[in-house]
Amino acid sequence: QFATAVTPQRRAEVRINQAKERFGEAYYLLGKKDEEGFKDVLGVYTERMQDIYNDIASTENLSTDAKKALGEKLTQAAVEQNTLLQQASSLASGDVATPISAALSVTTQGIDRAADLKGEPAIPEDIKNKIEALSSDMLPDEKKQEILSIDNRLEARLALGALTGTGAL
Image 1 (cartoon, rainbow, N blue to C red):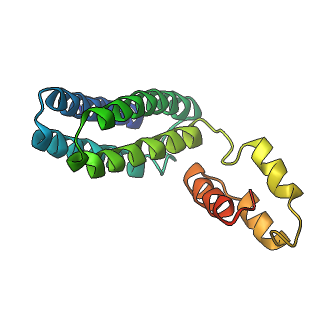
Image 2 (cartoon, rainbow, N blue to C red):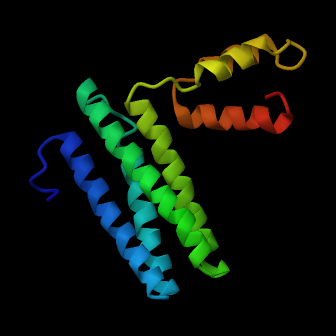
C-alpha cells in the first residue's frame, strides 16, 4: 500500500491506517487476555503514530485541502483510539498502565497535530481572552505576548498547562 501511495497525503493516510491495524490487533490481544502481546503491539502502534506526527509536522509539501483532509482523518483516528484506550484501561491489569498512558498521550498529540493541520487556532479565542484579561501582576505582559503568539497546539497545551498549574487560569 505504501509503495503505491504517490502523494504525501496518501502516504500519511496509509501509515495511519497501518497504525490503526496495529491498534486493533492490540485491542484484540487484550480481549484474549494476552497482556504481554497487548503491550508489545500497543508499543508498536504508539511508535508508529509518534513517527507519523513527527513526519507531518513539516507540511510544506501538502496543499491546504490535503492538510485539512489529513487533519480530519487524524482527528477521527485519535478520538476513536482515545475512547478505546479508555475502555482498555478499565479491562487491563495495572501491569499495562504505562503503555496505555503512553498511547493516550500520543492520541492527545494527534488531536493537537490535527488541529494544526486544519488551521484551527493554537489557543481558542475564549482562552486568549482570559489570558489577555490577566493582570500584569499575575502574568507579565511579555509572557502574555509570548504565550499568545504560540502557533501550534502542542506548545500551547504545554504553556497553558503551566499557567493552570500556577493557578493563573
